Length: 137
Image (cartoon, rainbow, N blue to C red):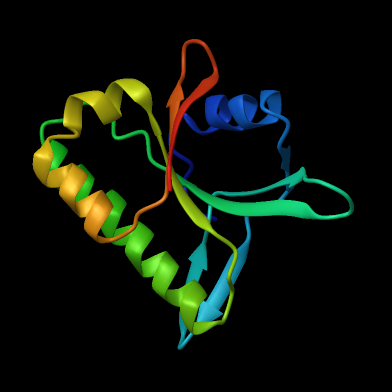
């Protein structure tokens, strides 16, 4: 099993508070010999009988000696996971969940360009308040 980021539980709590139901196991997908394990599958009842489902990769991106490397890893992993899902024909939206403090401290113009140009879906979470503060679609 892959190691969970240290803010994983706070992000699960935040999503639960926002009305999302978290699947008990991390979803696994395999394609071309590559196994990926996405951190969270969440579901929320929408209008009528429809439910909204999303997959979420959690990245805490804690302050480190190599913040650029942490960004490479987070966005690279997200892009690979999204590519595998596309190859499998899985249309479930994939989000990258990150803490608000980290997002604001590491999101310069080049990171925002990467998010925009690559259509990275994100959930920005205030960990102390356990609140979703921004969705990037």
